[in-house]
Image (tube, rainbow, N blue to C red):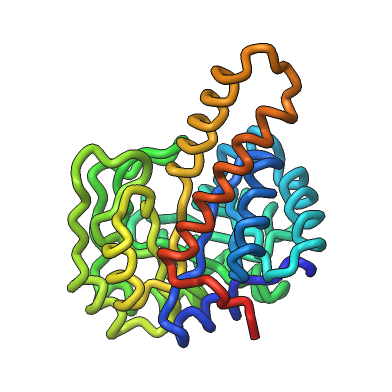
Length: 284
């Protein structure tokens, strides 16, 4: 089916008490794996690309690839810009057919973050595309994104931020981190509850790679409607690729390498969809 926006996906998740998985892709095989997993699980799915990914390829390339695969998919698929790091990149994604965009002004002060986020919302309105923004800073490092030790989201500021920007979903910082965890994450679920009590739009959790199933479930119960996954997919791709090459030293066809990693990613994504309680949510 054609690409869809995340608007109804997240509204349904909010009403149904589950989360939709947003999975970062880097190439064709990862994109195929994510969509094939969603089809097997009968789940709506969000394909996400970071700024470093689209700079390595291009916005147009990923739009064309995901659109082609989504057209043949049996479940709803959205294409999302993850951590859009500039006004120009966010606008470029909107112009090239992305159906969901995150503008990340979390590194700016409060007023500047509002100004940047609102400016993208105003452009996106013309295309009926939902905008995600972040308040507070998710810690850790991934790609060229460095959140340092992080900065927790203030519930009172979150209410004002949502009202003044007009965003469709809000990424919150409650103790998760991008990249690989060096210590066990401790989540401030009470803070999440407070944010949920004053903000009525869907909430988003970044830095979920490495969280336990119970931690993700508790976050979903307290308002998280979208969970992002990136690091563990990259790790699985590398592991599967290395194991295949080691077991098949005489193979030299890149398609065989890609197929091995694709199958491993597919199995992982099915597991993660299950932890989001999103299985069979595409069935009406």
